[in-house]
Image 1 (cartoon, rainbow, N blue to C red):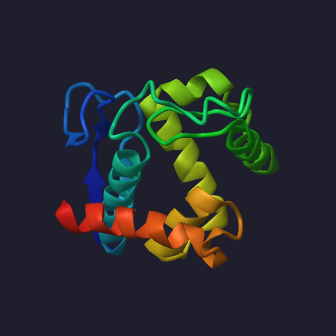
Image 2 (cartoon, rainbow, N blue to C red):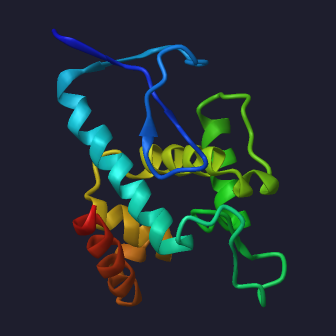
Length: 159
């Protein structure tokens, strides 16, 4: 088995991955070569979702009229998603938990997205993932999420 070692971090000030071999703070991730394309595809999807959701604005606040249920940050995360991610972490016997304030931090928002995606959509196609991110657990079945997917797909094709 050939292993590829990819040291990386996501900069909160840019949309790109930056490689910094001297500032790796987390353990180096060892991957099977076949996993590399899916990781790159996941990063492209996250980038497209961030663009569609907030145009890259980490301080974005959406649906202000829904007091207490606003969508916050680069990925426009609602309180119910924070609860869901914390529920998943509890099931996984992790001590890590997120707060509502974490939605304003891009790296934590992306981490929440991956926890949700890897739990609910480990093998799903990007369209199903994006439509459920926008429309909830059955979002891929809801007509109104088709327009959202079209925006995400357009952004994916522009990258």
